[in-house]
Image (cartoon, rainbow, N blue to C red; front, side):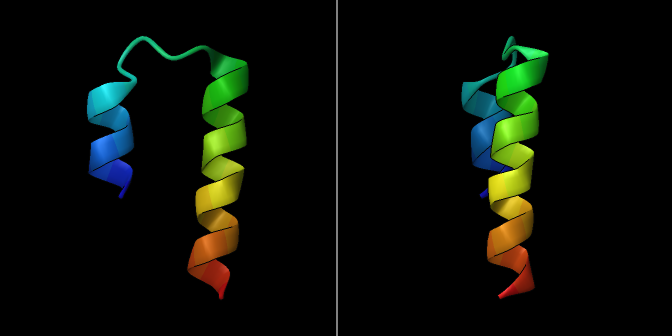
Length: 30
């Protein structure tokens, strides 16, 4: 999942990247 996101959003904005990271972290915790 992480690789897919980084591959599709190489030039993602810092704010969006933080949002995605928080979402992934929430999924990983479950």
